Amino acid sequence: MGKKIGQVKEANSDKKILRYLIVFPLLAWLVKMIIMFNIQAGGWLGADGENYIAGVDALMINGFFAEEPKLSYWPAGYPLMLWPIGEISPSKFLYMASFIQSTFYAYATYFLTRQILKSTIKYLAFTVSLLISFNPTLSLSSLAIGYEAPIAACFMMIIALVIKNYGADIDRKYWISVIGIAAWFAISIFMQPRFLLIGFLFVLIWALKTSSKKVASAVLISSSIVMSITPAIMIYRNINVIDQAKISTNLGVTMAIGAGDETTGGYARKGPVVPCEPIPPATSVNDDQQVKCVIDWYLANPSKAVKLAFNKAQFFWSPWSGPKAEGTMARNPWLKISPAKSITKNVDGARLVTGPVGVTISYLWILGQIFFLFWGYQAIRKFGDQAKLVANLLLLPIVLSWLISIGTIGDHRFRIPTMSLSLILQGAGLLALRKKYVKAL
Figure (cartoon, helix red, strand yellow):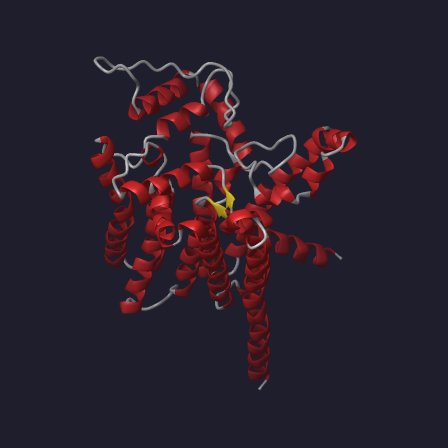
């Protein structure tokens, strides 16, 4: 009798929480719709917004094989995804892009937290929905032309499917989920190819932990095929346009920006560039040669490489503004209303923000994010095998993105695509701290 009463109470509690899981993303979506109709053109340009718009314009004029250099230098996937929007309504392009991205973000938030509510870590559902729905930088990024918020939403869909199908029978629904997870990764890779490695390792760990070796092999093969489709599209385009079987041609340049004798590892590089001479009969250095030159420089300068790695590791978690901000988030929508930004408008406020107080707060911000990330990771793992797997898969893309940033450029913008995952772990860390504090009292 007592057990039944407890089950009824739990069911009623879940129903109450479910209302919040609907209300939070819906309310955030409504707020963004209001903002969208009150800003020029219905959206903002992200860090590389002009480049993506130029790519879309070229695709609309010249089609899939448009020879716009930006489509080869930057990965063409995101402009290719925006291309149909431009064809449907060129005059309302930003409105439609903002609407689609914001709607997808809201649904992904609901779908993720709904699955969390059904899992062994159901206690996180309310907090996760609140944090992801109303995090100003991440949520408002869905109103900007940039791949960051859409990829963050893709990761929410991926984690939700992992939770939903944990312990499921190997049947038709299971294989649909396998293809679904691979498809969401394929879309993410289309927008940002560096997630190809992350997708492969993610699926490998998930498959090995949830199925037999035979099934895991089939999962890995089928997922790899699906995830390879979108980079293959970009390679095919570049073969026809620039006669190079490459996804994009900016890796070497990106790595070179973060390396050098005098630079700090951030986007605003300093000092001489890494030496790199063309191999005769070529008269210019290609992307592959540039990559090799940077790697050779790191190997020849290990102490400088370690120092740059430390700097870039710090920059990845740096604040959006203040004396320790480092990256390409000057167009962050949050900065339009950020208190820290407003304080700097007068002399005394600027001294406060850029002085010892501001520096101290910046370092506390960096260390606090990392501390709660790993504390939350450990807290989630205490809730059984399903929770351990989820915690590992939450942390994996974050750590790999962090390492990729260390190998290229230290930029706080690079953490946004995995920010939906880090907010889950950090939210778990905050709840663990509250629980420990309450117990101490």
